[in-house]
Image (tube, rainbow, N blue to C red; front, side):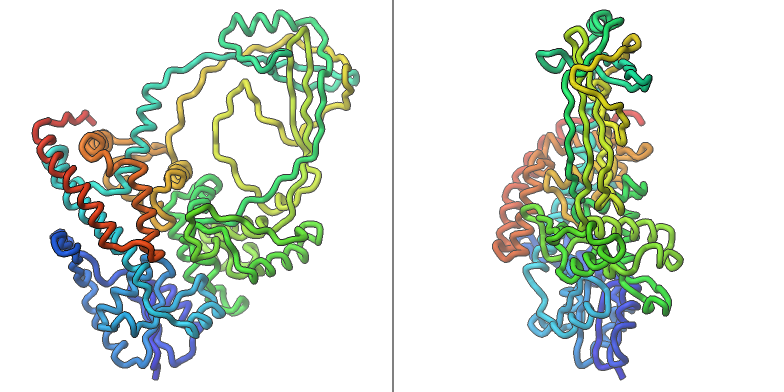
Length: 585
């Protein structure tokens, strides 16, 4: 008879863990939260230190009964929910539902669902960390007060059924402001010039106008471009300067939640929620069959903003690189990446749990999405531990009648990490007057002062482009840059603003709806600090401070309420006086 009970939140994770523990362990899933604030009322007593009134979630009654029955029969109860604030809060709610005092709880955490990690965790239980729980509670209570106090104002003045929230209001603002910039954008004309040059052995290549001997020049209209063309047409171009260099390119760090969501969007076209859903499946465990040891958690925990990796994982990667690619691909000293200041460093970066499980080896056991995402994570991690790539770069300036034309490019001398994986660059529109360097350029051997004949110059008219709309990758990057949201919340923020019809997708881009624009205007006019980027980032920092034990839940909530209640009072007076025009759909 099982005398130890392990409770996790996910059934598939429970199935994986069950396989690792002996018969005297019973493993069950709570299927997420078991208690929450009521839907029908505020559920927070603001007057009495923000006391939260939690109730059992509707429909969870039978499950809670079953967990209680199992808990009664067990000698030891291990709470093994996810290793973050949300997981800690679920463990705390479970303990409360089961009537276990906090000091008697056995909380266990593992960063990867592997046999070694699970067994090590069972040997080292701890108490529930109330700092983590209070950080989650503060977020929940803040968002509840905001939602329940702001929403009626929106119903009265904009449309019934609307709701406002702290972080999604800011995300909506980011998208609305970008749209306003696009609308007010005035295109500016500019011109570029290309010339085709011929070497003595008849080889041709293209050079681009850069400027004159005084520096870079912008051609603003056809007359300016034509003047340059008239000056160079029919004349020889001579080699003005020739620079060759070897450039070392280092690999990107292993993935954090935000960089994984961005890269999966760019490379695989996955929206952020799809990425997180598939990552969750890979983390919780996939049945690989007896050949690979049954059900295995394939990656480490997918909610993290740290780029740190364990020494064991690093050693395994280095060993693998030497065997598969040879010693020259493995750097002499292991690569260490620095997490950005303020990153929550509790978890490692996202990496494969076992380096030896190459994507191709287990492809048949994975779904299409699982294979694509696992391959991305595996390749990025292996590449992050490899030697730099070496590129041979060349840049040549030609002079003709006082004007300078340029060509540049590179060829790969030693692929290094690029043999496995190359991180995609953000799609920034390159302007035609500043052409990107060309890969694998093959230029004839040229010497300083050598003269080459050319065809007549080609003139091209362009117009500057408006800023591009945000997509999943660029919005997540923006939220990260502004320090808004945390790894666990990016996908939820995007889902919320779409579900509430504040924004919609057009192709891959986010476009604000008339509803989103009106709501944003109302928030900007009446609750400037709530949609203020600095306020939202500061609130995230305060939640981190509660987690680290440097701040209390009550202090943070009191400060917030003092400010917010005043705004609320003023807004209720102001909003009633104005009628809000709703733009036609």
